[in-house]
Length: 166
Length: 173
Image 1: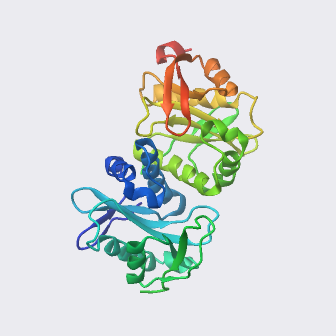
Image 2 (image 1 turned 180 degrees about the vertical axis):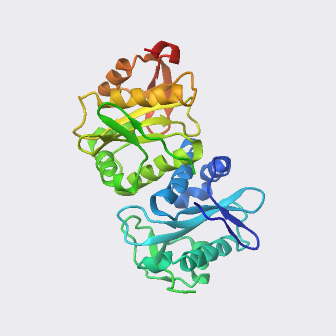
Image 3 (image 1 turned 90 degrees about the horizontal axis):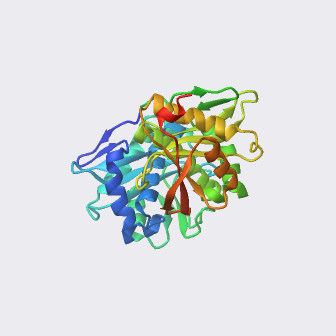
């Protein structure tokens, strides 16, 4: 039910119980502060469970990015109740600076467009912290533009809007 | 993809969590009733909880059911088997939504969930974690035959009482 996508360097696959140690290590690190960390191992496991559980609720969700050695990050679409727009998000646990998040996010966008899901969504957004320059650069590389407007759920971010087609 | 089993009791159906349960779950987590289980939570965080409930089944092969009142079809709580990383043991938990307390529903649903754990999963013991001051939950634990068995510090809810359930042989009746 959760599709597996492949890119030149990555496999995008369902989050599994065996990914817990990678989630826990990332959420224990200072790098996770930008997405709500640091979290202890139980809270990190709950993030893993909610990433996996989004799929049966909505029919889309987050993939684990696997470079052959295990989980190096996550990427995918989510729509918490009460929000107007589907969000494309990405988070690298390790292996930063090699363009892997861009590769994964581009593949996820193509999947949403090819499956027809994107056509059902008014727009695809990414909420990026005002100080998160690497993610801003990534969004720009994907063709998104910064509206400068803060989403109501997180005033530290601005809403980036992805183009209708690639 | 595992199939989430449906359990039926005299008055209740225990079934898989569904997106339509969000409003009832969010109302519970926004209410003072959720103060013993990490609440109150915003709608955003309640959504994460719902996704987490569904994901627990997929990661572990067991989880918590949404409890539906058979006569009305309304979701009245969440009850079942819980084992996130960092937990000391498998837990049997129950959260009853506003307006459905005091009628024995938590006990009835938890009893069915415990029977499922013992009879279908072959487990030999279970604990329940109850926050200090949560007298209603303490009464449910007692009614289920559980006994105090030490303490556990849970990252979000703090220090909680451990209640040990009777073994399968002790609840055979």
